[in-house]
Image 1 (cartoon, rainbow, N blue to C red):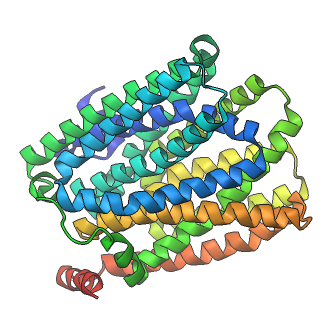
Image 2 (image 1 turned 90 degrees about the horizontal axis):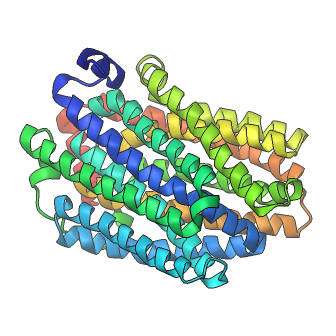
Length: 436
Protein backbone atom coordinates (compact mmCIF):
# COMPACT_ATOMS: atom_id res chain seq x y z
CA UNK A 1 0.00 0.00 0.00
CA UNK A 2 1.52 3.42 -0.96
CA UNK A 3 2.65 5.41 2.05
CA UNK A 4 0.40 8.49 1.45
CA UNK A 5 -2.66 6.23 1.14
CA UNK A 6 -1.63 4.35 4.27
CA UNK A 7 -1.22 7.59 6.21
CA UNK A 8 -4.62 8.77 4.99
CA UNK A 9 -6.23 5.52 6.11
CA UNK A 10 -4.53 5.49 9.52
CA UNK A 11 -4.75 9.30 10.00
CA UNK A 12 -1.14 9.03 11.22
CA UNK A 13 1.79 11.38 10.63
CA UNK A 14 4.91 9.86 9.04
CA UNK A 15 6.48 9.55 12.51
CA UNK A 16 3.41 7.71 13.85
CA UNK A 17 2.87 5.31 10.94
CA UNK A 18 5.11 2.52 12.24
CA UNK A 19 3.57 2.67 15.71
CA UNK A 20 -0.01 2.68 14.42
CA UNK A 21 0.69 -0.33 12.22
CA UNK A 22 2.24 -2.33 15.06
CA UNK A 23 -0.64 -1.31 17.34
CA UNK A 24 -2.99 -2.57 14.61
CA UNK A 25 -1.10 -5.89 14.52
CA UNK A 26 -1.10 -6.11 18.34
CA UNK A 27 -4.86 -5.68 18.61
CA UNK A 28 -5.45 -7.94 15.59
CA UNK A 29 -3.50 -10.78 17.19
CA UNK A 30 -5.08 -10.28 20.61
CA UNK A 31 -8.69 -10.36 19.44
CA UNK A 32 -8.08 -13.07 16.85
CA UNK A 33 -6.76 -15.24 19.68
CA UNK A 34 -9.79 -14.46 21.84
CA UNK A 35 -12.40 -14.93 19.10
CA UNK A 36 -10.98 -18.31 18.20
CA UNK A 37 -11.96 -19.32 21.75
CA UNK A 38 -15.21 -17.36 22.21
CA UNK A 39 -17.61 -19.66 20.27
CA UNK A 40 -16.14 -22.65 22.12
CA UNK A 41 -16.66 -20.88 25.45
CA UNK A 42 -20.23 -19.88 24.57
CA UNK A 43 -21.16 -23.41 23.49
CA UNK A 44 -19.90 -24.69 26.85
CA UNK A 45 -22.11 -22.08 28.54
CA UNK A 46 -25.17 -23.19 26.56
CA UNK A 47 -24.51 -26.83 27.47
CA UNK A 48 -24.33 -25.85 31.15
CA UNK A 49 -27.61 -23.92 31.14
CA UNK A 50 -28.73 -20.62 32.62
CA UNK A 51 -28.30 -21.48 36.32
CA UNK A 52 -24.73 -22.64 35.77
CA UNK A 53 -24.04 -19.45 33.83
CA UNK A 54 -24.93 -17.29 36.83
CA UNK A 55 -22.49 -19.24 38.98
CA UNK A 56 -19.82 -18.92 36.30
CA UNK A 57 -20.24 -15.14 36.19
CA UNK A 58 -19.83 -15.12 39.97
CA UNK A 59 -16.63 -17.16 39.70
CA UNK A 60 -15.32 -14.74 37.07
CA UNK A 61 -16.06 -11.79 39.35
CA UNK A 62 -14.37 -13.45 42.33
CA UNK A 63 -11.35 -14.18 40.13
CA UNK A 64 -11.19 -10.50 39.17
CA UNK A 65 -11.31 -9.47 42.84
CA UNK A 66 -8.40 -11.78 43.59
CA UNK A 67 -6.37 -10.68 40.57
CA UNK A 68 -6.81 -6.91 41.05
CA UNK A 69 -4.39 -6.63 44.02
CA UNK A 70 -2.08 -9.16 42.35
CA UNK A 71 -1.89 -6.93 39.28
CA UNK A 72 -1.39 -3.92 41.56
CA UNK A 73 1.54 -5.66 43.20
CA UNK A 74 3.08 -6.56 39.83
CA UNK A 75 2.83 -3.01 38.47
CA UNK A 76 4.24 -1.65 41.73
CA UNK A 77 7.29 -3.90 41.48
CA UNK A 78 8.06 -4.38 37.77
CA UNK A 79 8.50 -1.78 34.98
CA UNK A 80 5.68 -1.84 32.43
CA UNK A 81 8.08 -2.45 29.53
CA UNK A 82 9.00 -5.81 31.09
CA UNK A 83 5.68 -6.69 32.68
CA UNK A 84 3.45 -6.70 29.59
CA UNK A 85 5.40 -9.26 27.49
CA UNK A 86 5.69 -11.61 30.47
CA UNK A 87 1.97 -11.38 31.24
CA UNK A 88 1.05 -12.29 27.68
CA UNK A 89 3.60 -15.13 27.77
CA UNK A 90 1.79 -16.40 30.87
CA UNK A 91 -1.47 -16.44 28.87
CA UNK A 92 0.25 -18.53 26.20
CA UNK A 93 1.38 -21.01 28.85
CA UNK A 94 -2.18 -21.25 30.16
CA UNK A 95 -3.43 -22.17 26.68
CA UNK A 96 -0.81 -24.90 26.39
CA UNK A 97 -2.16 -26.35 29.66
CA UNK A 98 -5.73 -26.30 28.26
CA UNK A 99 -4.47 -27.96 25.07
CA UNK A 100 -3.00 -30.75 27.17
CA UNK A 101 -6.25 -31.13 29.14
CA UNK A 102 -8.39 -31.25 25.98
CA UNK A 103 -5.93 -33.65 24.32
CA UNK A 104 -6.34 -35.96 27.30
CA UNK A 105 -10.05 -36.20 26.49
CA UNK A 106 -11.40 -33.75 29.05
CA UNK A 107 -13.32 -31.51 26.63
CA UNK A 108 -16.66 -32.62 28.07
CA UNK A 109 -15.51 -32.59 31.69
CA UNK A 110 -17.74 -30.15 33.65
CA UNK A 111 -14.75 -29.00 35.73
CA UNK A 112 -12.58 -28.35 32.67
CA UNK A 113 -15.46 -26.60 30.88
CA UNK A 114 -16.14 -24.31 33.87
CA UNK A 115 -12.43 -23.55 34.26
CA UNK A 116 -12.12 -22.78 30.56
CA UNK A 117 -15.16 -20.46 30.63
CA UNK A 118 -13.80 -18.53 33.62
CA UNK A 119 -10.29 -18.33 32.17
CA UNK A 120 -11.43 -17.06 28.74
CA UNK A 121 -13.68 -14.46 30.38
CA UNK A 122 -10.90 -13.23 32.69
CA UNK A 123 -8.29 -13.32 29.92
CA UNK A 124 -10.47 -11.27 27.57
CA UNK A 125 -11.02 -8.35 29.91
CA UNK A 126 -7.56 -8.45 31.46
CA UNK A 127 -5.61 -8.67 28.19
CA UNK A 128 -7.71 -6.03 26.39
CA UNK A 129 -7.43 -3.69 29.39
CA UNK A 130 -3.64 -4.05 29.29
CA UNK A 131 -3.67 -3.31 25.57
CA UNK A 132 -5.56 -0.03 25.96
CA UNK A 133 -3.45 0.96 28.99
CA UNK A 134 -0.39 0.53 26.80
CA UNK A 135 -1.99 2.61 24.04
CA UNK A 136 -2.81 5.38 26.54
CA UNK A 137 0.82 5.26 27.65
CA UNK A 138 2.37 5.77 24.21
CA UNK A 139 -0.23 8.08 22.59
CA UNK A 140 -1.61 11.40 23.86
CA UNK A 141 -5.27 12.49 23.63
CA UNK A 142 -4.95 14.23 20.25
CA UNK A 143 -3.22 11.17 18.79
CA UNK A 144 -5.84 8.88 20.33
CA UNK A 145 -8.70 10.71 18.60
CA UNK A 146 -6.95 10.33 15.25
CA UNK A 147 -5.46 6.84 15.60
CA UNK A 148 -7.82 4.84 17.82
CA UNK A 149 -10.31 4.20 15.03
CA UNK A 150 -7.64 2.54 12.88
CA UNK A 151 -6.12 0.72 15.86
CA UNK A 152 -9.56 -0.55 16.91
CA UNK A 153 -10.02 -1.75 13.31
CA UNK A 154 -7.04 -4.02 13.89
CA UNK A 155 -8.96 -5.65 16.72
CA UNK A 156 -12.02 -5.98 14.52
CA UNK A 157 -9.99 -7.57 11.74
CA UNK A 158 -8.70 -10.04 14.31
CA UNK A 159 -12.21 -10.63 15.57
CA UNK A 160 -13.19 -11.43 11.97
CA UNK A 161 -10.30 -13.85 11.55
CA UNK A 162 -10.92 -15.67 14.85
CA UNK A 163 -14.53 -16.83 14.39
CA UNK A 164 -13.87 -17.50 10.69
CA UNK A 165 -11.11 -19.91 11.62
CA UNK A 166 -13.27 -21.55 14.28
CA UNK A 167 -16.29 -21.90 11.97
CA UNK A 168 -14.16 -23.57 9.29
CA UNK A 169 -11.66 -25.65 11.25
CA UNK A 170 -13.26 -26.67 14.57
CA UNK A 171 -14.92 -29.67 12.89
CA UNK A 172 -11.53 -30.71 11.44
CA UNK A 173 -9.03 -30.17 14.28
CA UNK A 174 -11.36 -30.04 17.28
CA UNK A 175 -11.27 -27.77 20.30
CA UNK A 176 -7.70 -28.69 21.21
CA UNK A 177 -6.39 -27.61 17.82
CA UNK A 178 -8.14 -24.25 18.02
CA UNK A 179 -6.54 -23.63 21.42
CA UNK A 180 -3.09 -23.88 19.82
CA UNK A 181 -4.17 -21.46 17.07
CA UNK A 182 -5.15 -18.96 19.77
CA UNK A 183 -1.76 -19.40 21.47
CA UNK A 184 0.04 -18.65 18.19
CA UNK A 185 -1.85 -15.36 17.86
CA UNK A 186 -0.77 -14.35 21.38
CA UNK A 187 2.87 -15.00 20.45
CA UNK A 188 2.39 -12.50 17.60
CA UNK A 189 0.95 -10.03 20.12
CA UNK A 190 4.12 -10.33 22.22
CA UNK A 191 6.24 -9.52 19.15
CA UNK A 192 4.09 -6.42 18.53
CA UNK A 193 4.58 -5.28 22.15
CA UNK A 194 8.34 -5.50 21.75
CA UNK A 195 8.25 -3.55 18.49
CA UNK A 196 6.05 -0.81 19.98
CA UNK A 197 8.35 -0.56 22.98
CA UNK A 198 11.32 -0.12 20.63
CA UNK A 199 9.46 2.61 18.69
CA UNK A 200 8.67 4.44 21.93
CA UNK A 201 12.30 4.29 23.01
CA UNK A 202 13.68 5.38 19.63
CA UNK A 203 11.20 8.18 18.97
CA UNK A 204 11.03 9.57 22.49
CA UNK A 205 7.28 9.85 21.97
CA UNK A 206 6.38 8.00 25.15
CA UNK A 207 9.03 8.28 27.84
CA UNK A 208 6.53 7.14 30.47
CA UNK A 209 5.99 3.82 28.75
CA UNK A 210 9.57 3.28 27.66
CA UNK A 211 11.84 4.54 30.42
CA UNK A 212 10.03 4.99 33.72
CA UNK A 213 10.56 2.41 36.49
CA UNK A 214 7.80 0.47 38.20
CA UNK A 215 4.76 2.50 39.23
CA UNK A 216 5.13 1.78 42.94
CA UNK A 217 2.34 2.60 45.35
CA UNK A 218 -0.15 0.41 47.15
CA UNK A 219 -1.49 -2.79 45.61
CA UNK A 220 -4.98 -1.34 46.24
CA UNK A 221 -4.19 2.08 44.70
CA UNK A 222 -6.35 1.41 41.65
CA UNK A 223 -9.41 0.83 43.82
CA UNK A 224 -8.85 3.92 45.98
CA UNK A 225 -8.24 6.11 42.90
CA UNK A 226 -11.56 5.01 41.38
CA UNK A 227 -13.48 5.68 44.59
CA UNK A 228 -11.98 9.16 45.01
CA UNK A 229 -12.38 10.44 41.44
CA UNK A 230 -15.81 11.65 40.18
CA UNK A 231 -14.44 11.40 36.65
CA UNK A 232 -13.54 7.72 37.09
CA UNK A 233 -16.86 7.06 38.83
CA UNK A 234 -18.60 8.48 35.75
CA UNK A 235 -16.69 6.01 33.58
CA UNK A 236 -17.73 3.22 35.99
CA UNK A 237 -21.40 4.19 35.66
CA UNK A 238 -21.11 4.16 31.88
CA UNK A 239 -19.52 0.71 31.96
CA UNK A 240 -21.99 -0.70 34.51
CA UNK A 241 -24.97 0.30 32.35
CA UNK A 242 -23.30 -1.31 29.35
CA UNK A 243 -22.58 -4.49 31.36
CA UNK A 244 -26.14 -4.72 32.67
CA UNK A 245 -27.69 -4.44 29.21
CA UNK A 246 -25.11 -6.75 27.62
CA UNK A 247 -25.79 -9.42 30.24
CA UNK A 248 -29.55 -9.12 29.73
CA UNK A 249 -29.08 -9.64 26.00
CA UNK A 250 -26.64 -12.52 26.55
CA UNK A 251 -29.09 -14.35 28.83
CA UNK A 252 -31.88 -13.84 26.30
CA UNK A 253 -29.56 -15.49 23.79
CA UNK A 254 -29.11 -18.44 26.16
CA UNK A 255 -32.91 -18.85 26.14
CA UNK A 256 -33.72 -18.22 22.49
CA UNK A 257 -30.83 -19.93 20.64
CA UNK A 258 -31.31 -23.51 21.96
CA UNK A 259 -35.09 -23.14 21.63
CA UNK A 260 -34.68 -22.41 17.91
CA UNK A 261 -31.63 -24.60 17.10
CA UNK A 262 -31.27 -28.02 18.75
CA UNK A 263 -27.93 -29.24 17.34
CA UNK A 264 -24.78 -28.26 19.30
CA UNK A 265 -22.51 -27.97 16.24
CA UNK A 266 -25.11 -25.86 14.43
CA UNK A 267 -25.35 -23.52 17.43
CA UNK A 268 -21.56 -23.14 17.56
CA UNK A 269 -21.53 -22.32 13.84
CA UNK A 270 -24.33 -19.76 14.24
CA UNK A 271 -22.51 -18.05 17.11
CA UNK A 272 -19.33 -17.91 15.04
CA UNK A 273 -21.22 -16.43 12.07
CA UNK A 274 -22.87 -13.83 14.32
CA UNK A 275 -19.41 -12.81 15.53
CA UNK A 276 -18.36 -12.59 11.89
CA UNK A 277 -21.26 -10.28 11.03
CA UNK A 278 -20.61 -8.08 14.05
CA UNK A 279 -17.04 -7.54 13.08
CA UNK A 280 -17.64 -6.90 9.36
CA UNK A 281 -19.94 -4.04 10.33
CA UNK A 282 -17.59 -2.80 13.06
CA UNK A 283 -14.60 -2.78 10.70
CA UNK A 284 -16.43 -0.61 8.18
CA UNK A 285 -17.42 1.90 10.88
CA UNK A 286 -13.91 2.02 12.38
CA UNK A 287 -12.14 2.61 9.09
CA UNK A 288 -14.56 5.03 7.47
CA UNK A 289 -16.76 6.66 10.13
CA UNK A 290 -15.27 6.82 13.63
CA UNK A 291 -12.59 9.44 12.98
CA UNK A 292 -15.04 11.72 11.17
CA UNK A 293 -17.64 11.21 13.90
CA UNK A 294 -15.20 12.22 16.65
CA UNK A 295 -13.95 15.22 14.65
CA UNK A 296 -17.36 16.58 13.57
CA UNK A 297 -19.79 15.46 16.27
CA UNK A 298 -17.52 15.23 19.31
CA UNK A 299 -17.01 12.85 22.19
CA UNK A 300 -20.38 13.50 23.86
CA UNK A 301 -22.45 12.50 20.81
CA UNK A 302 -20.21 9.49 20.15
CA UNK A 303 -20.61 8.23 23.72
CA UNK A 304 -24.40 8.76 23.72
CA UNK A 305 -25.08 7.11 20.35
CA UNK A 306 -25.11 3.45 21.41
CA UNK A 307 -27.24 4.01 24.54
CA UNK A 308 -29.89 5.49 22.22
CA UNK A 309 -29.56 2.49 19.89
CA UNK A 310 -29.97 0.19 22.91
CA UNK A 311 -33.19 1.93 23.98
CA UNK A 312 -34.69 1.47 20.51
CA UNK A 313 -33.39 -2.09 20.16
CA UNK A 314 -34.77 -3.33 23.47
CA UNK A 315 -38.12 -1.74 22.66
CA UNK A 316 -38.23 -3.67 19.38
CA UNK A 317 -37.16 -6.87 21.14
CA UNK A 318 -39.92 -6.35 23.73
CA UNK A 319 -42.45 -6.07 20.90
CA UNK A 320 -41.22 -9.25 19.17
CA UNK A 321 -38.89 -11.46 21.33
CA UNK A 322 -37.78 -13.92 18.62
CA UNK A 323 -34.35 -15.09 17.51
CA UNK A 324 -34.06 -13.01 14.27
CA UNK A 325 -34.81 -9.79 16.16
CA UNK A 326 -32.33 -10.76 18.87
CA UNK A 327 -29.61 -11.48 16.32
CA UNK A 328 -30.18 -8.26 14.35
CA UNK A 329 -30.18 -6.10 17.47
CA UNK A 330 -27.23 -8.00 18.96
CA UNK A 331 -25.14 -7.53 15.82
CA UNK A 332 -25.86 -3.79 15.65
CA UNK A 333 -25.29 -3.26 19.37
CA UNK A 334 -22.02 -5.17 19.54
CA UNK A 335 -20.69 -3.62 16.33
CA UNK A 336 -21.49 -0.16 17.70
CA UNK A 337 -19.79 -0.97 20.99
CA UNK A 338 -16.57 -2.10 19.29
CA UNK A 339 -16.52 0.60 16.60
CA UNK A 340 -17.98 3.62 18.42
CA UNK A 341 -18.39 3.36 22.21
CA UNK A 342 -15.19 1.45 23.02
CA UNK A 343 -12.63 3.61 21.19
CA UNK A 344 -14.44 6.79 22.33
CA UNK A 345 -14.41 5.56 25.93
CA UNK A 346 -10.71 4.70 25.72
CA UNK A 347 -9.80 8.30 24.78
CA UNK A 348 -11.07 9.33 28.24
CA UNK A 349 -8.04 7.68 29.89
CA UNK A 350 -5.32 9.53 27.95
CA UNK A 351 -5.42 12.54 30.31
CA UNK A 352 -4.76 10.40 33.39
CA UNK A 353 -1.37 9.86 35.07
CA UNK A 354 0.42 6.53 34.36
CA UNK A 355 -0.64 4.87 37.63
CA UNK A 356 -4.31 5.48 36.87
CA UNK A 357 -3.90 4.42 33.25
CA UNK A 358 -2.86 0.98 34.49
CA UNK A 359 -4.12 0.43 38.03
CA UNK A 360 -7.41 2.36 38.08
CA UNK A 361 -8.22 1.44 34.49
CA UNK A 362 -7.56 -2.23 35.19
CA UNK A 363 -9.94 -2.12 38.16
CA UNK A 364 -12.63 -0.51 36.00
CA UNK A 365 -12.14 -2.87 33.06
CA UNK A 366 -12.04 -6.04 35.17
CA UNK A 367 -13.57 -5.78 38.63
CA UNK A 368 -16.21 -3.15 37.80
CA UNK A 369 -17.02 -4.75 34.45
CA UNK A 370 -17.33 -8.29 35.78
CA UNK A 371 -19.02 -7.03 38.94
CA UNK A 372 -21.68 -5.56 36.70
CA UNK A 373 -21.95 -8.84 34.79
CA UNK A 374 -22.30 -10.84 38.00
CA UNK A 375 -24.91 -8.55 39.54
CA UNK A 376 -26.78 -8.45 36.25
CA UNK A 377 -26.86 -12.23 35.97
CA UNK A 378 -28.39 -12.59 39.42
CA UNK A 379 -30.86 -9.76 38.76
CA UNK A 380 -31.92 -11.46 35.52
CA UNK A 381 -32.34 -14.87 37.15
CA UNK A 382 -34.17 -13.31 40.09
CA UNK A 383 -36.64 -11.59 37.80
CA UNK A 384 -37.15 -14.76 35.77
CA UNK A 385 -37.70 -16.74 38.97
CA UNK A 386 -40.37 -14.19 39.88
CA UNK A 387 -42.15 -15.03 36.65
CA UNK A 388 -41.02 -12.03 34.59
CA UNK A 389 -41.15 -12.80 30.87
CA UNK A 390 -38.51 -11.98 28.27
CA UNK A 391 -40.82 -9.30 26.90
CA UNK A 392 -41.04 -7.54 30.26
CA UNK A 393 -37.29 -7.94 30.74
CA UNK A 394 -36.72 -6.12 27.45
CA UNK A 395 -39.08 -3.31 28.53
CA UNK A 396 -37.13 -2.98 31.80
CA UNK A 397 -33.97 -2.51 29.75
CA UNK A 398 -35.40 0.53 27.94
CA UNK A 399 -35.26 3.02 30.90
CA UNK A 400 -31.87 1.57 31.85
CA UNK A 401 -30.69 2.46 28.33
CA UNK A 402 -32.00 6.01 28.74
CA UNK A 403 -30.18 6.36 32.09
CA UNK A 404 -27.04 5.11 30.31
CA UNK A 405 -27.55 7.82 27.67
CA UNK A 406 -27.86 10.53 30.34
CA UNK A 407 -24.67 9.29 32.00
CA UNK A 408 -22.87 9.29 28.64
CA UNK A 409 -23.85 12.90 27.99
CA UNK A 410 -22.64 13.97 31.45
CA UNK A 411 -19.37 12.08 31.01
CA UNK A 412 -18.80 13.55 27.55
CA UNK A 413 -19.29 17.07 28.86
CA UNK A 414 -16.89 16.38 31.73
CA UNK A 415 -14.27 15.09 29.30
CA UNK A 416 -14.70 18.16 27.10
CA UNK A 417 -14.26 20.45 30.12
CA UNK A 418 -11.05 18.64 31.06
CA UNK A 419 -9.77 18.89 27.51
CA UNK A 420 -10.21 22.68 27.58
CA UNK A 421 -8.50 23.15 30.94
CA UNK A 422 -5.06 24.80 30.84
CA UNK A 423 -2.30 22.20 31.03
CA UNK A 424 -1.27 23.28 34.50
CA UNK A 425 -4.82 23.29 35.81
CA UNK A 426 -5.44 19.81 34.42
CA UNK A 427 -2.29 18.48 36.00
CA UNK A 428 -3.15 20.11 39.32
CA UNK A 429 -6.65 18.65 39.18
CA UNK A 430 -5.32 15.20 38.51
CA UNK A 431 -2.73 15.49 41.24
CA UNK A 432 -5.37 16.58 43.69
CA UNK A 433 -7.52 13.62 42.71
CA UNK A 434 -4.66 11.22 43.32
CA UNK A 435 -3.59 12.78 46.63
CA UNK A 436 -7.04 12.88 48.26
